[in-house]
Length: 234
Image (cartoon, rainbow, N blue to C red; front, side, top):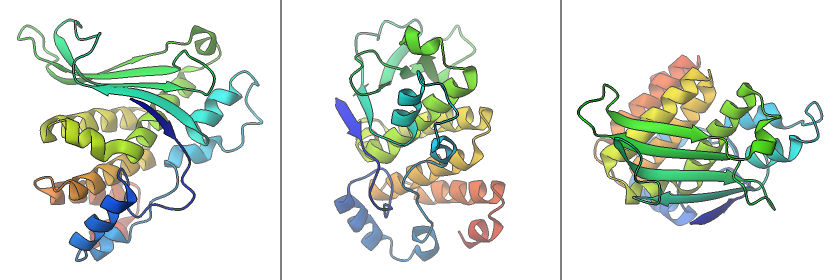
């Protein structure tokens, strides 16, 4: 599917779902007052770092603008596809990020489950590729990591509930854990909180088992971000 991710005009009540599902979810969880009161920004926290693009080279500005603060085009699929022959793995989720009017993806990210018994790296894995060689020449390693992070965060904020419907609950959790580890590696701690808040919203909306585990994860992330009172309230 092709998805055009716009910047919301107003803050969302809950992340990762339609306004209709968000309203139902809020009504079904009205007792979770402190949780529902947590602020959900228009964009992931990392986007604030790239609001002013004047300091960047002209060649890279359209990329940074699209991924962080403007219209972002994503093509995604779930299940086996043309890449399912990957050694020791099977594709579960593929996400490609584009800028408008450019047919070559800037980033391709594939989540797959390692299943082979002869490898030590069993479990959910994430493969990242830079497809657009023209852009890759001017992207530093820091930019590349930030681009993949914001693409994933905006994607899950937009259609996370749909993705959760297509994956088993365990797969969805495993994908979230892989993304969270990557955010921690990049030292994007506020964005890690944003990820778990999104996933927690989705689990409430889809009525997954044990949603309190996710809410406690949000509480831990709040504490890690020195928001001690908010974390204690949850």
